[in-house]
Every structure is written in structure tokens, then in C-alpha cells.
Length: 348
Ligand code: GAL
Image 1 (cartoon, rainbow, N blue to C red):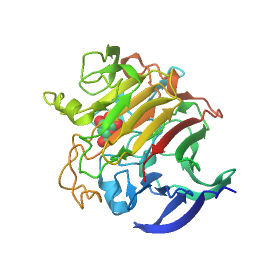
Image 2 (cartoon, rainbow, N blue to C red; image 1 turned 120 degrees about the vertical axis):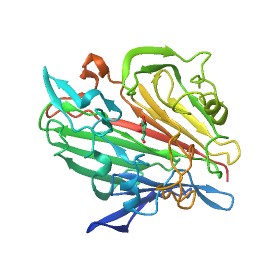
Image 3 (cartoon, rainbow, N blue to C red; image 1 turned 180 degrees about the vertical axis):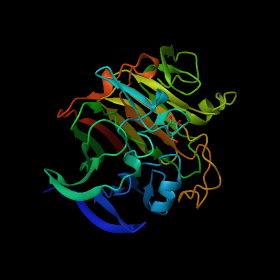
Image 4 (tube, rainbow, N blue to C red; image 1 turned 90 degrees about the horizontal axis):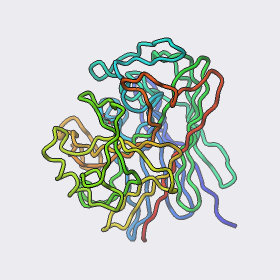
């Protein structure tokens, strides 16, 4: 009989008197997925190599570093991924002013978003073995309704990581969660030699505050064309004359294929295919990572631009200047689950 996926719980550290736990799942192939109860953060994804295992996501040494970083490294994002113009949502004709955390904008759920919460973590049982359940009552973040949120993290016997977000709210609200995982599949400090494919023929046009204007721009003949596997270093170099000096963009995903994106490293032969049930993908190449104040483990206590790439599946909201939040609305009592999957491939 196939060996089942095994889960274990251990102490990670303590933050301001709160115990932070680490929960891990390991399958029979030797793949391990670890989560922290702080921010429902993906702490490690270890894949087997010839000589041992290799961690393919960025991580920090301790909870303090996670909370000090402005880049949401591998943390759960909610209630709403991305930017809300002027921090205002309109539901049923009523405007709610959310706390703003990026000038006048509310980014990634605001100052009290999912990433800043300590979640209740436990190991649960599924047909293929153990899984991780993170749960939290999201309240006091300025959004309408108290929201009971569960995120179920699974690892399959054939190396597929699943993330399922389930929420219910006591009032009509908005819900557009994601996971801010920064991958680096190689052994080098940056992702420059890795290849990326995104199944998207358009990106969204953004204004100076990075809020979608409602217009779409075709990617053909631009550095945003990742419809075929494309070298990231070369693509980033083509963005050198922009203020961003890299990518921080919203791709409109074609939902005609199983995978919306694939990242691979030609040298380590590790790849990740991303499956999502939603029509948007934000790609950020860590352009603004700083040397100081980023105690990342990969680069031994510093940060480097392009050290990782985050690919954040989410629902494209029509919001921005249109004020139409219907695409991400969650009605009182309604349950509308979202799933993200990472298909891992490697050669031993
Ligand atoms: C991305 C966002 C970037 C940056 C990053 C986290 O989703 O588009 O502008 O804020 O998250 O640092």
C-alpha cells in the first residue's frame, strides 16, 4: 500500500508572548511542505535532489523578520489581494473606507491583513493522509462582516501542493485571497536564469498608483510576452528603463489550459506548474528587495533584487475607477472556495 502523507507539528519560535508553530507535511517521495501559524506562511517547500533536499521558496529565520518585511514573503494574503483605490469598497451602494497602508491605497488586505494574524494550525486527515488546516476569525480589519476563514494545505503522493481558501462572513463583504509565495528554484541568489511561461495574452494597464485603469494591453511584441517559456534575466533587462526595473504586473489569464503558469530552472531541473480557478495572476520579480533589513536565509541575512519571483493567482476585480466589486463580492453566509495548486517536478 502506498505510504500516506505524514504531518507533524513543532514549535517555531515565540513572538510577543505568542507561540508560533511550524506544521509540516512529508510524502513518500521526500517532498516536504512547511507552514507557520504566523500569517499562514509557507515556510519551506523541500524537494529531493541527488544529494539531499532543496528549498524552493524564500524564507526568514524568525517571526520578527517576517513581520518586519514589507514584501509579504510567502504569507497568506487576504481579505483582498492587490490594491484597492483610495481604500474604498462599494457594496450594495454603500462605501466602506478601509485602513490605507500604501499612501491612499489599501494593499493586500490592509495593515491587519491575513499575513499579520496568528492562525490556529492543526493537522487534519484526508483520504491520502495528513493535511494542514489553518483557521482564523478575521475581524477588526475595517472590512464589512466578521469572516471565518479556513485555509487547507495539502500535499499529494504525486507532489501536488493544494491550497484551498474557504470563508464565510456575517455581512456582505469582499474576498480575493492568495498566497504570496516567492519561488527560487535554483541554487543562485537570483531567478535570472530561470524560465517562465504565463498563459496570458494581455496585462492590465495600471495608473501611477498601480491601480488597474480598466484597459488591457496585448503582450505580443512586449517584454510581457511569456506565452512561451522565456528567460527571466533577459525579460527583466528589457524592463531596465522603467521605474520598476523589473515586473510588478497583473496578467489576464486564459483559462483554457490546466496550468496558468510554469516556472523552471534549467540547471536544477526543478519546475513548478501553477493551477488556479481564477482569471488573474500578479507577477512581481522582487525588484525592490533591499540588501539591508531583509534577513533572508537563502542569502544569509541580506536581501537581493530578483532573489525570488512571486506569482499570485487572484480574481481580476473590475474595481479601480469603476467601483464595481461584484467579481470579488462574498455575500453574507455564502461559501465561495478558491483553490491554487503547485505541481512540483524534479530530477533526483
Ligand atoms: C505584489 C505587489 C507589489 C509589492 C509586492 C509585495 O503583489 O504587486 O507591488 O507590493 O506584492 O511587496
